[in-house]
Length: 337
Ligand code: GTP
Ligand code: MG
Image 1 (cartoon, helix red, strand yellow):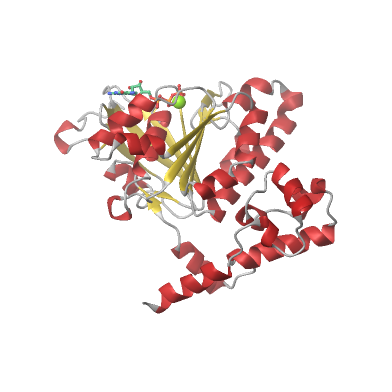
Image 2 (cartoon, protein in one colour):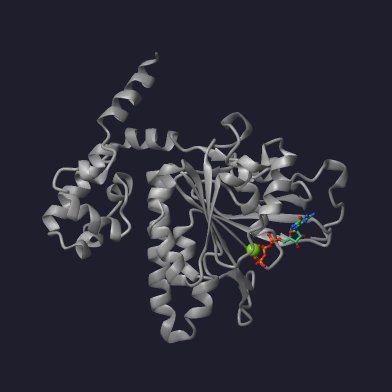
């Protein structure tokens, strides 16, 4: 057994499995915390003192609970070299297209949020479907050997499409479908509620991919007008932060989709911009802009922002099989993009 393996085993043993195992949490407090959406030690480790306030526990006790949870899962203050180690735990998930994976530096990362934005039909939901299948692949094939959680706000998830994609890559479709946990969100409040209560489902099912498709549609239709903008942004911000913390706590990939809107009053730059403004932009670590082309199934993916990768573009296509590369001989010659 390698030293590293032993170290991991040791760490696992020292981990506390249930909320009730943490010092200072009795059955009543545990119940209240669960009502607030904290079902696991992992999610408590990522909580803030203020978030625990509604459970009726003192600030001091809340701080003690959070630090016990952190110590249990090994999240405390870290030295920069340890930070590097945490980065090394980052895993990558394939999109199904080598070109798009290359654009993203090897696939979508765990522990951060990747946002796909673009107009209707640009392929946002299709990529989400493909990722739900790919996440179940073994690491050597670009997967994370985990399950997917799909929060669908527009009722566009299709099991039949998953079956098609699974068959194509040689996975058992029935098994693949069983490993996708689906929830339809009816309103923005419901959408937030689902994510706030997702920690237990994530842990129990070894979820390695969390999708919110679409992140902004409900918020956009419910919060109308200038006077509601501030509260919309505040809620969106809270929602995104919950997502980041889940992605970190469970070393999972987080994906959100976003529509675009035209800015007719804009004279310079691209008049098409994603909904959600600065909040979504700053919280998404990686943003990818998807565009349709004059060449049927061919789409362009543009990396618009990333913490460390250069901007760039690649093409892919959406076919019966799912998300695929465009073969060299199929590549559009003209720049009819
Ligand atoms: P909105 O949610 O409306 O904003 O769009 P979106 O970006 O989510 O688009 P989506 O991912 O749903 O892409 C839809 C497009 O994917 C369709 O216009 C088709 O071109 C393609 N597509 C979807 N399903 C299939 C399929 O089963 N076979 C093939 N060949 N293409 C498909
Ligand atoms: Mg869609």
